[in-house]
Length: 187
Image (tube, rainbow, N blue to C red; front, side, top):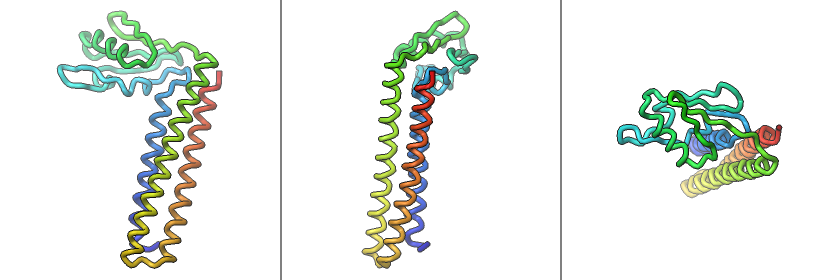
């Protein structure tokens, strides 16, 4: 591989890895009827004046497939955490017993499952668009190298390599989507 195009290809692969990582994180937030601590990743609480992730002020565990238990490290945080969960709009009602907060995950209806699949497909499409944008940027970088004296045949090979990498990452997106769809639709 030509030394001039190697950084472009390596950067593209790295950015595509990040796009897949982001997709995995977003798909993990889509609840498939099973309790998961990742469902609470986007929730922040006011902790002595600073906006802190929920995981920074409480222990979170899932004792079974339908329950999330939030154990704050300080008792006075119970009400603040409860308020943050209500405000987060995740569709779950916290139950505060004075010691811990419990979130019970209701079973999914068929209609809700279809909505979640649509959401998963939307996230997958966002990932595909990101991967394609990375490919476009890499090809533009190669064209700039051609203007700076890179041989045309080397540039063509590099573009083919980037297309192959793009195809691989689009397949990864499809596999993640397929797995999430199966997880959501399994009763």
